[in-house]
Length: 305
Image 1 (cartoon, helix red, strand yellow):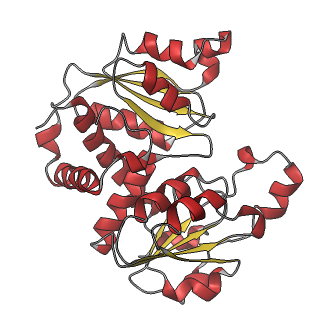
Image 2: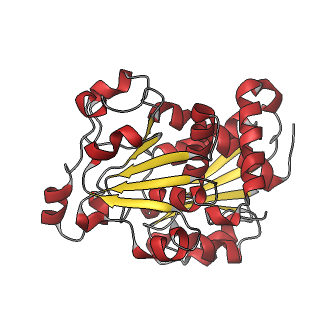
Image 3: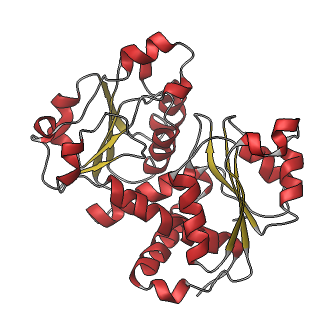
């Protein structure tokens, strides 16, 4: 594995290995505190980020490595018109591995084609977010003990939500998985996920506008915010932004073993009162993101404890 651009470039065995390494890091963090000494991670974030960028940086520091990079396009030579390919060729002279976020779909793939070091896609437009998906998979495995035989509910902005798209692709490879998509009609999952992923693999799925009706079935509820930055029309955003708000009364019919995930940031789609419910798992999901990125950095750099 040279780069990580798309979650489907990882085999189930590779995902299992990354999850096993992350679990070992959680159990024995001191064993990993020097494995990346002398290594540098470049974080090239052409789009705003808090969790993903800081998670990568924390991951590299906790492995004993160093970090350089930028947090917005305006502070890079992209503001002068430099191409992604030239930026990556330059940065790969300075760093051993690159994490890139970009508003344009496919930009990390272009970067990987021109980079002399491994490139990790840290989110490209509304397309893909493979490391968030790895964090999601680690969280599901730790909370439910398995990745098969699950009913997953996805709720909110399923049209533009790249974290949803990546997780649907990843979970479609596991046995006896059912997916329920709850969203406004305008924000349904893209057709390509149905025609290229779900139907060819015989995945059972349901599309609905009624989250309450399906709540008792779910093992995982993956909430997402309606993303203002993906809308061209402010009126459409304002009309749809509060379509689904998870409250304690709405959560009441859910299984005690059900877990609520959210890639964050949230706006108001999950009431803060839900945070103290034992089914709320989104802050643990953030923590798991750091550990799985540590495992991924090690894998791509070819280092071990």
